[in-house]
Amino acid sequence: MRLRFRRKLGLSFILLILFFLLAQSYLIYSFKKSFLLSSLLSFMILLPLGYLILRYLTEPIQAVTDLANRVASGRLDQGVPAESDDELGRLSKAINEMSLQLQNKIEEISREKEYLQTLLGGIMEGVLVVDARGRILMVNNALRQLLSLPPHVEDRTPLEIIRNAELERTLRQVLQDGENTTLELTLPSQEGKTFEVNVVGISPSPEGVVKEDEGRRGVIAVFHDITRLKELEKIRRDFVANVSHELRTPLTTIKGYAETLLEGALKEEVASQFVQVIKRHSDRLEKIVEDLLILSKIESKEFQLRM
Image (cartoon, rainbow, N blue to C red; front, side, top):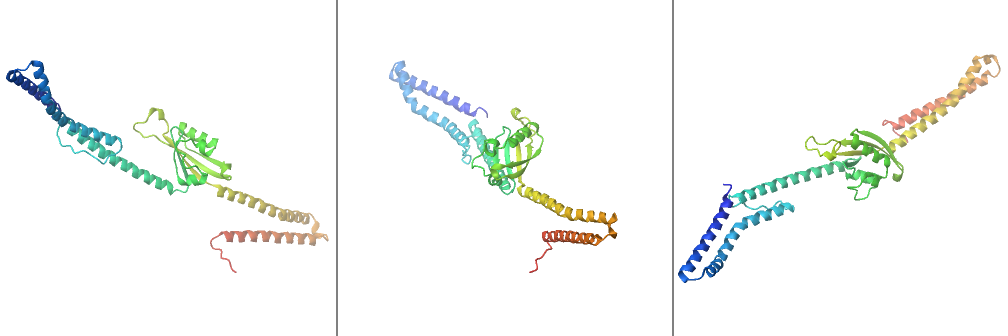
């Protein structure tokens, strides 16, 4: 079974030789032609037959070659029917099967890629994926908008597009050590925006790890925009500082006058004035506390404005 094509080739060669010898013998003995002339005439007679046999033998080879070229060029949906049962027929079937499997695999990878792009597109945080060489593989739309990135950033280093040495150094460190880390970046080029960046290494697959890519296969950096949070923290710190200052003044006054009264000023004429000062500053403290309670109610969901 494995030698069918070889048998066809061998039989064709033998038949051509037999026809050549028969034609040569016929011309020599019947027409008394010379050996050289008989050989030349026999060769001329067998040329059309040899061409037909050669075409018959090479058509399957040409079909398989065309199929291999189409597969190599990416046209996987055009197969060749395997008519013969020889080696070429089995080769054609194998290439057709390989083409079908490649097409299914490419469609599966395309679906996964579209799903991944849809997933990353729906994430509000910016996502940056870097390969083992430190080159950008992909970024999602959120990161493009957050950092105002150019259209084409693939196969470039993060330092080229983000211009932050600390981020570049952290990505390289995670690629080498494989330890996940978090850093905080403030980018002056983005109007002073502050980002919390979680950098996670992509572990290599357990099978077939390439030697030059030992350690991490890549890095994923997730950018969280915490600019608003930082502003709120600053507002809270300023608020606490202002409230502390407002409370310290009446408390210091009340404490000073109360200590003076306790030290013997109750029997003096200024005692009533001291008490009035203490009362006035106590009222001030009460108003500050009421204002704080009103602010707390305003920030709660239960607050309703009464016109």
